[in-house]
Structures are given as structure tokens and as C-alpha cells.
Length: 180
Image 1 (cartoon, rainbow, N blue to C red):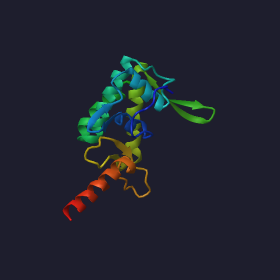
Image 2 (cartoon, one colour):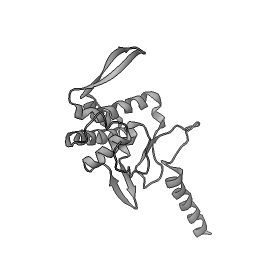
Image 3 (tube, rainbow, N blue to C red):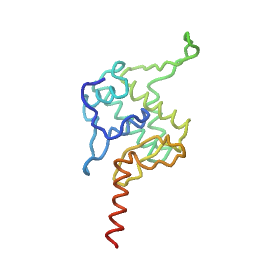
Image 4 (cartoon, rainbow, N blue to C red):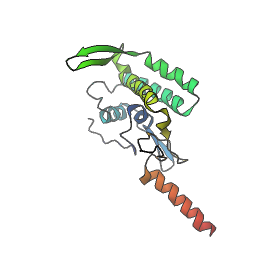
């Protein structure tokens, strides 16, 4: 784990969405964890990938390409996003294995610097296969964060009730009291 503190307001989402959440809004300004290799090291550490992949310029470049592709796939027309995600996935593959515990899979990469980007794109495929309707953008108009809705009834709207949910409630309350 990287020694640097992760400054992001929403962490712990599945890998693909956690990559999207490396950009967030604070006090009206967009923040970006992936502006350099130090931020990359924080992200790799937060996702348990720091022991497997280097926080170098090539890995950062590939990860930014994957983030753009995932953003297009999640927020834009599906066909547009699919091409970008497929381009990232072209840099790795799954090799079937037999382990002492039974069947297994091992990701393989022609170039290890594609590893984190490929794993995030692969995770997006897993989310699509699991519950595509549970991949959500926060409902707050000024929030750019994404989450995988694990609520029982599937009605989560906010990245965080403490942040965006409270802001929305406060805005509605203010509007009601202002009009009264």
C-alpha cells in the first residue's frame, strides 16, 4: 500500500468504477488523482495492485486510456464505449489453469504496464454480466462519481448519502423555505 493518503471522497467500489472515481469534484473544481505517478501509486495501493505493477509513466498512460474508455462506455452510447474498452482488452488475456483448489484463471499481459488498465476493463465486463442496471452515476447534478448499487432494492441514487444525498436534501429544504 502506498504511504500517501487517498484523497478521493468515494473509494471501495469495484475496480472499473474505482478507476472512474479517480476524478471528482471538490468545491466546484474537478480533482484528478491520476495527474502523475504519485497518484497512480496511491490508486494501485488502494486496489491491492501495488505489489504487482509499477507506478510508472507507461502504466499511467494506459490507465488513463482505460479510464477514458470506461467513461465513454458507462456515460455514453454503448457502441462508442465498446470500441475503447475492447482496445484496452486487446492487451491481455485470461489463461485457464488447474490449481490444487480446482479450475482457475490467470490474467496475462504482453506488456505488464497494461495490467491495471486491462484488469479495470475486465472488471467492467464482470459488472455488465452481473447487473448492468446497478452501474450508476451519482444523481447529484454536480457530482461525477459512479457506484455499483448493492442495496437490497436497487434504489441507491447517491455516491454517498453523507455528501451528495445531504446536499440534495438541503437544496430541496432551502427551496421550500425560500418559497414559503
